[in-house]
Length: 527
Image 1 (cartoon, rainbow, N blue to C red):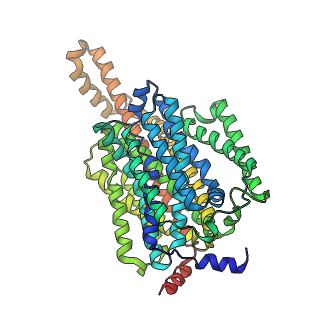
Image 2: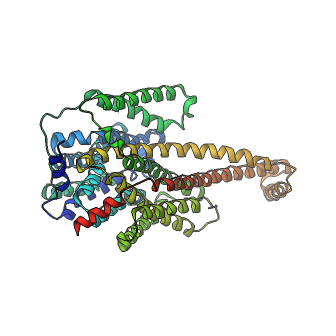
Image 3: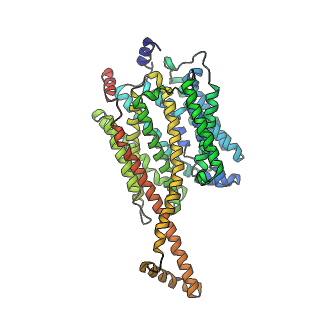
């Protein structure tokens, strides 16, 4: 690319109001991110409608993620082949039609295929929204746009279980998909009216798709997602088929990246990884997204299994994360440029770690505020962490690199979320076994507390059992069940501590990220 072209790309500005331009991309991004989690609480109802097991209904979630992962690296190609505006509208249209097909599906196979189509249409929306925000705004306006983007990305998955639970219990589960239809068509109308293509994102001639790259991409991601989804259930590498799927995915992944390096026209340009800011920031985003989706996966599970919450109540208990995210956005808007991005990031990471640690000290004798406060802190931390990291990771890239860089970053972010979700199931299972092994040593006649509790329960059950021996056996079973419950609770607590420590690991990397001078230069140019 010539210096004249680079200068033209960097100086491009939309002809209209940039805030009108991002309305359709933000609405579409919210819709896509919401659908990542909106079906979670409805899975039992979906499984019942089609008379399938819970394990089979999981494909309603994984087919969406797999298709999204496949389309994300191809965004740069499709933007050049169709033009970004046309590709955006096509993606929203496919997502909207697929949402309708999900709602009218009459079999588990049909809804899985429709969800895959939905993911294929929606996978492009979030990366394009990030690229549009970074390209369209400068200086303080860019900070505000990225803050809105960060709020959408964080709040939508949090609201998903709440909205899904309410709709499922008050209407019917198909309506969690039908609500996308009016929003989707509104996004298309607004995009047609307000969106503009920069010079480097217009439709181009002689654009070709590397078919072998696409093949290796599919062979890499589809088995990988299956392994993540079914690994814990199959006892991971103790299952032969897990080993085979992992090997196939690993080989295909290596071939995919090798092809990107050697091909003249790769699907993903890996040269952006040479930028230290982008490489470091993307690694941090992978970990943050893994923590966010993993915590969203296990917290409702803990509330329902350990505290007896129903689907809607457990979703409402998580909603303070959204309120915390909104508070984080207000904090950023009030303070603005008075603090550096590094400072915002450090505050956000500290809030994430604090929220995780507060959740790690819960017990079964808690009230609602013990859940609300940590979630609020966690939500504020998510916005104040994701916003500066996403901005600084791309601030040193050229505008014409943004679409490709956003696509690659969101691909790796999606994979990070899948890894976090799969690992957290294993962590709960393994930590539960560890705590059970430690606690079972207390169930011995040498422990006076155990003997006292056993005699108390035996006496209470004597009338029901009829004889002392039977009553003692029933009492010992009750105590053992309490031990299992306690070990499971301890497993959740240990997992939240791991989340907190994982967040603390990010602190040194905030000092590696550069770009504050670039932000100040943009603000100076604007002034």
